[in-house]
Image 1 (tube, rainbow, N blue to C red):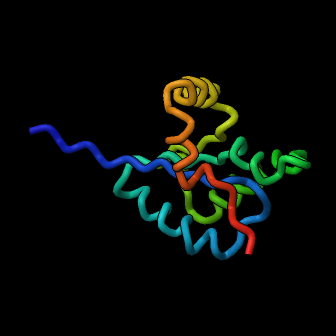
Image 2: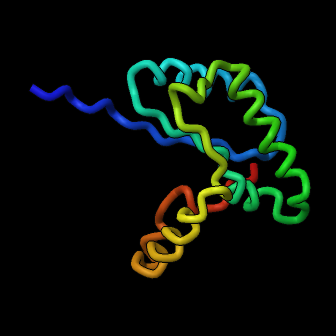
Image 3: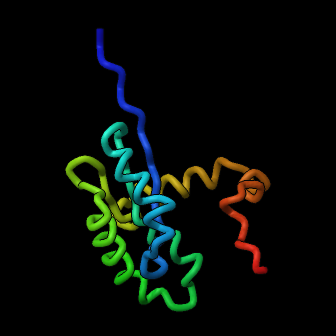
Length: 120
């Protein structure tokens, strides 16, 4: 019998500023545990951060480095998980281009991730 493949996880964070306790409790603590049972792919999604800091994207590069350091300090282990920066994977932009040409605009607008955050 062949062993069952481990489940995969792909998750990421936008580097829009310093990480806080909510990041640790809400995501990082779970990610650290998942490394034991899943094939994990964790992304620093810097292109997604441009949707927040589009007026002044100059800080994003520094935040990418800070997020990577914080992840390592929280227990994300590059020996047990793939850690990458979105903009360093050029195929990501190519895939976006291809998918955006195939998926109709109304379908994309209906996705909650595509909607701007609501101001209270």
